[in-house]
Structures are given as C-alpha cells and as structure tokens.
Amino acid sequence: MSERPRCRLCKSASTQRIVIDDKVAAKTYIRCDDCGFIGVSPRCFPSKNEEKARYLLHSNNEESRGYREYLERFIDQALSPYLEPGSSVLDFGSGPTEQPLLRYLMEARGNSCSIYDPFFAPGRAWRGR
Image (cartoon, rainbow, N blue to C red; front, top):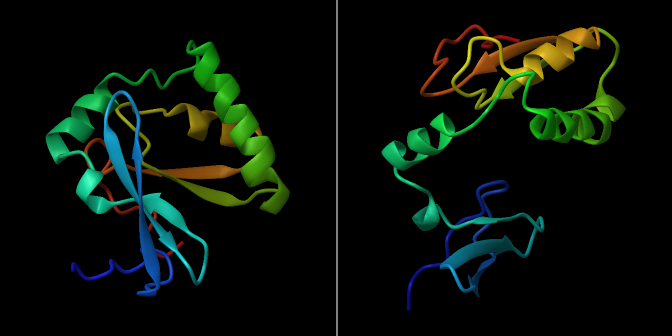
C-alpha cells in the first residue's frame, strides 16, 4: 500500500485520494481530513513544457472581454473584501505579457500589483513585501 501524500497546505498526513474519471481523463485529487484543502495530485501536474505551452494560449489583455469579466468578478469577490485602499497584491503566474490584465485592473482601483511568473516574469521584485 502506498504512503499517504501530505497536504500541500497544512502538511498533514491525514489525507485521502479521490479519483474522478470523466470521459476525457482520470484525475486524482488529494483531500485533507484536517484542514479540508482539496487539490490536484502533483502526479497530475503538467510538465514544465506543457504548462508553458498552455500559458502561451492565454489571452491576458484588455481586449479579452470574457477574461476581463472573469477577473473583475474575482477581484470583487476574492480580493476587494480583504484589501485596504492602496494595498499591494501579487499576481503569481501573471503570464506572457508585460502588462497583465490583473495588474491593470488592480492599479485602476488604486492598488499596486507586483507580477511574478516562473516563465515570463521570473524577477524577485515582490520579495520583502
């Protein structure tokens, strides 16, 4: 029997594997019994080349109406309730553009936004913030 994976959030070994087998592919998720975190098993992560290729398909600009609406909902529901005016946020995984849409939208709302992306913006300007 294989060892239980540790929770990526709280590091607990009290986890269980959940396999979802749909018509496209099976995916394994790890659920933590202690903190409730559910995440895709690292064995299901794409390779670095697959991840970068997927990023390159992404339209991360003002002209992408659907993505802009998605990000505005995300900001309204997941960020704004927790941010003080003038807060600084980090767009982790900002994608292949010099001016990511999330940064643009956050700055338009009076916040600053640092970007980081392991492929496209690997700088460390966000450290120490």
